[in-house]
Structure formats: C-alpha cells, structure tokens
Amino acid sequence: MRIREVRGRRIWDSRGRPTIEVDVVNEDGSWGRGVAPAGASRGTREAVERRDGGVRFGGLDVQQALSGIEREIAPALRGLDVGDQSAIDALLVRLDGTPDRSRLGGNALVATSLAALQAAAAAARTPLWRHLAQGRPVRLPLPQVQVFGGGAHAGRRVDVQDFMVIATGAESFAHALEITADVYRCAGELMAQRGRLAGVADEGGWWPDFARNEDALDTLVAAIERAGFTPGGEVAIALDIAASEFGRGGRYRLALEQEELDSDAMGERLVRWIERYPVASIEDPLAEDDEAGLAAFTRAVGSRVQVVGDDYLVTNAQRVRDAAAAGACNCVLVKPNQAGTVSEARAALQAAREAGYATIVSARSGETEDVAIAHLATGWDAGQLKVGSFARSERMAKWNEGIRIEGEQPGPAGFWGARALAGGRR
Image 1 (cartoon, rainbow, N blue to C red):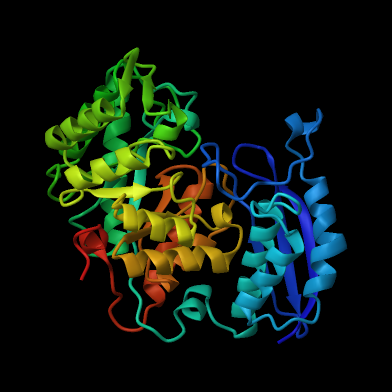
Image 2: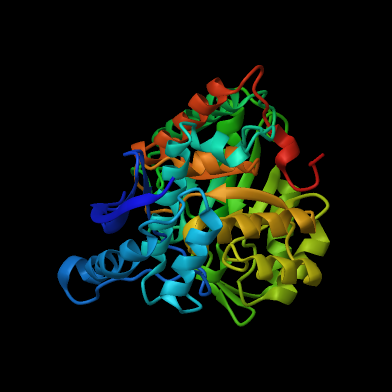
C-alpha cells in the first residue's frame, strides 16, 4: 500500500503546550495518526525538538517544524510503501541530516514515524499491537505507575522525580491496575489526613508535600499497607531518581535535605534506601555523565534491583551496547521521541535484549490522548510499561488501552508480571 498524503497540524499536550500531530493517508483511504510527546526531564543526547523560539507560547510553538513536514517530509514520503517502516524512518533521518534530529526536529520526525506505523496497521486492517507482533506470541507488560511526582514534574518540590508502585503480585494487566488503584487512593487519603494533599503533579501523581525524600517512601509503604497489600510482596516500589537533574561532574545537590554528595555517597544513600524499603527498580540513580558511578552502583545492587538507564542511554542502540560493555545498568527505558523514529527505538530495544537487559516502554511528562505506546509495549513484547500516574485522562487512556488489548488476545492473555523485571526474565 502506497502513501498518498501526509498532513501535519499543531495540537496541545497535557501541559497546554503546542505539539505536533501527523496523519499519514494511504491510497485506499485508510490512515494512521502519530503525536509527538514532550519531556520535561531530558537527556542531553536525545533527539532535539524543533521549536520556534520568540515570545509566542513562551517560544514553544511548532510552526517551523510543521513547515518542514509540509515542504520536505510530505513530498518525500508520498508514494512510498507504508509497510516498509525501516525505509520510511531511514528517509526521515536522511532528510533531517543532523545527528540530533534538530533541523527538521525530533518532534516532526517521531510524529511522522508513528503515523506511518499506524497507517501500515490500518492498511492491514489489524490492531497496531498485532501488526507489530507479526504473528509472534506476546504478553501484556507489567505497569510502573507513579504515586508521587517530584523533580522536574513538580516544581522540584522533592529531588526524586517519580515514586512509583509495581504490582509484582498481579496475575494480569487488569489485575495490576486494580491493585494500583487501591494504593493510589490510599496514598491520597493519607496525604489528606496529614493535611498535605496539594493536588497532582505533571503526570498525575500526588503533589509531593514532604520535608524529606524518605518521607515519600515512608508514605508510599504506608499506602501499600493501608490498601491491604504486603510491601515487597504483592506490591514493590520503583523510583526514578532523574539524577542528571541535580547532579553533574560527580557531585549531587539534594535541595530538600540541603546536602551535596559525591558519586560514592550518592550511591550509598540509594543503597540504604534499597535495604530499608521494598525497592525493585531504580531509574537514573546517577547522572548521565557519571558512567563509572552507574557501573559501580550496578555492580553493588544489580543482582537485587533493576537499574534503569534513561538520560544515560537515550533510547540509543549504540549507547546500550557501550553501557553493557561498561557494566552499567541492566534495563533500558525506551522512548520513541527520545530516539527520533520508531525504527531507532526498536533498535535500542533489540540491543537491550541482546545485552540481556530488561526493557520498559515509556511515555513523557507532556502527553496527549495518543495510546500508541500501549501497543508498542505489547507488540514488541517489551515486558514493562511506564506512562505516569493513575489519574489524568492522557495517562488513563493508555492504561485503559492496555485493558482493551488484553481483552483482544486469542485465548488466555499472556502477562509478564514480575518476571519482566531485570533478573526475573525467562
């Protein structure tokens, strides 16, 4: 099936900021739509968005990127085989011509790439997850769900960016969300009782009104118990430290505790948390420029805890291979917009598998109602899915899509469960 038309438009993300939506229309009238999300916490090596600058919308408008879609991308894609995703994405990369996708913009590229992928599934008259699976058996991913949002997602009210739960005792995707719903509700009740309920952060997690980072962990454990679950049994904790946001050159400045730690001390602090709390996964524990620290931390805890690379790996296959050689991390966060195209994101996931790493498909803090990543996580059999909290429609759309996908499985639906975590795969 050939591509007949490519159309771009400006829409608005969950923070009320401009973003790009692209429609790819096939010869037979079937079509697909892709949307570019946007992150608040970004690695320095990830694909660069094209923004207009200036005064309008705080410099965040996307008219220049849309112009590039109209003038360059649309004419180049017209007539291509919509089913050849690798050729489409390779052409997008060549058209941009920069290592960081900054000329046409990573936002323009990823929206177009996702639209083409959706159009290919539409042409085949099949759901996106099934189109990606290509007949291979797949399992629903294990959700990582934010309960408290911090860091860049909550005015840096606490240093840690995400305090999340993982329903390690769940028997299905839907069951995992049932467990999460109770924990999220109980966390809100505890905050209200303590007079600390102050709304929600960017991704829907409760606003972190705490005096210490450890207070959030204590409250999360209490919420798990209040919901009737055993911390570390049915429910474990996942953290996104996002250390690149407050660490550089081997120095880490914790604003909440008014401390400055070196790489070893920062790692030791996190090891104490792991020993004290039921932490099963920890993302970006040290900064993207601290590879030696990441490797040392992985050696110290990697047999017990999933160590996730995000800013350090930026969904880049070569960086995954280099990290594996250095012994840093044992899990990769996969964000299509961080790479620039679907094919590059898939290559990073494949490199992770070859290295024996676990994988998590992830949304961004600036999201829309687009649900593609629920299909990517399932169709790629990625194992884990992270889309934010258990509130706000742009998040719930994705969790609810996972429930629908689970219901579409032929026969009993497969579910990764706790086996998806690094060290638990088989």
